[in-house]
Each structure stands twice: as structure tokens, then as C-alpha cells.
Length: 163
Image (cartoon, rainbow, N blue to C red):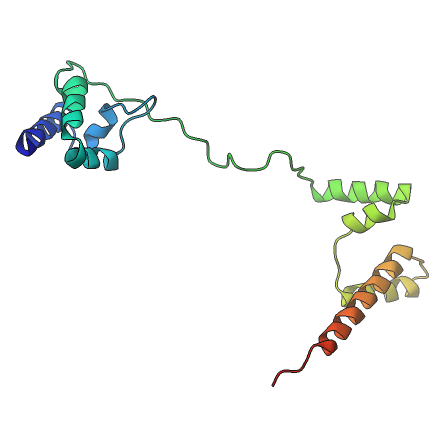
């Protein structure tokens, strides 16, 4: 039986004009859609050789014009990307930030304002003072940054020292 199967496989490879055993997989349908995978075909050689012989004779050997089976439809690359997320350009974000400022929506302003480190906030606050501008948002950012910085220092000093 093994010799008969090997001869059948070689005859099928020759008939389709292939170079190796795996080339015949594309001519053997599997299930509802797509062709048989080469691992499945190898497994069939040992576990179910009679079924493989039937597939080979039906779709390649006894067929005057063997046709390749169309591959199983797969999901496109990037198909798992979230479609419900909005993508905003920098200009879009600046416009929304401007609208939030015009509406006086402090929560939205905080969400749309890029995060700055304490050093940058200090520099911008000092610059605004030098130029005689009052920027309430900048002062609020400074107070929040100092408060969170103090909380972090307090939490770090409360931890037991390990030597």
C-alpha cells in the first residue's frame, strides 16, 4: 500500500508539472473551502492513506484537466485594527482645545493639553510672567505638577529603607 501511494503521489506531481510532493496539495480540496494543507496531507499518508489515494485519483489522476483549488479566504492584514477609534491630526487637536477654551470646559482642556514636565511648566510660567500675561491654565498645571511631585516624594520617603 505504501509503495502504491508513493507511486500515485509521484504520478500526480508529474501530471500537474510540480517539483515536489507539496505542490499537489493545491489541487486537493479540503472541507468546504480551500485546499488541503501539506501537513494534513503528510498526516493522511500515515493515518488515512486510503482517503488520500481517493483524493489523488479523483482530483488529479482521473481528471483530464486538474484545476487548482482557490485558497481559503483569509482576513486581510490589519483587519483587527479598531475601526471605532478617531484619528486626529495635530491641527484637529489644537482646534478642539481652542473650542474647549472658548467654552470654558476645564476638564476637556486638561485632557487635550499635552502633558508637560515640571521644568517645562516652570519655564513657560516664568516666561508668561515676564511678558505680563496671565495664564490660569499654566498656573493650574503648575499647582497640579507640584502637588503630584510632593505626593510622590512623600510616598517614597514612607517606604522602608532596604539595605
